[in-house]
Length: 178
Image 1 (spheres, helix red, strand yellow):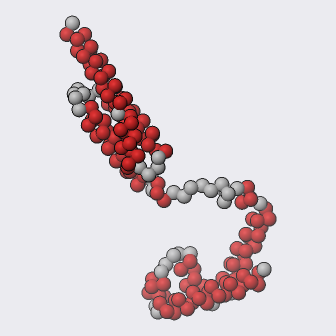
Image 2 (cartoon, helix red, strand yellow):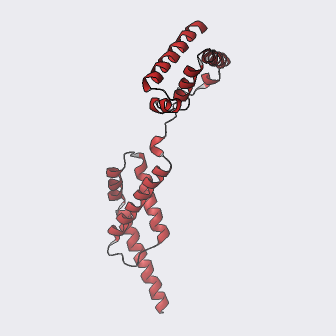
Image 3 (cartoon, one colour):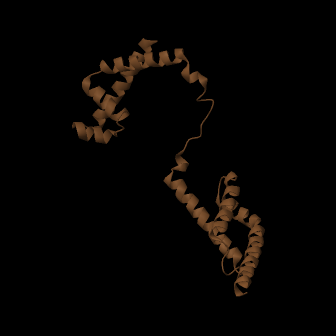
């Protein structure tokens, strides 16, 4: 008989807690709207709170249900930010269908791109060796002028002049390729 009473009490607590949680849907959505830029995510975050509440079960003390629910919401929000940081979510670039349409696989465009690449490679090979090396260290390896100067035993000014010559050389050859 005591077991049946405990089960009835647990069911009653669960029912009370479920009603309290359902009443918190609006305040939870407002809580997330104030903290999340993307309004589309608000409903997902609210659902995540309810999922966690369901998985954890009814707390023993339902007197402070709203505090418990908002603590769960804070935990959901913290986990969201951690996931965004780990996944570098703010660095993602949205797909632009206009930029990645069918024209990317146009054979004439691919051929023209290969021709331009071959012309640029040929122009690079006609540069003086030091100028070519400085250009490649800067543009391909991404080194700064100071690092290139240190590596090659030159002044920063000399590196800058070589870069100007390299770009002028490439521009002159680009005009010839047309």
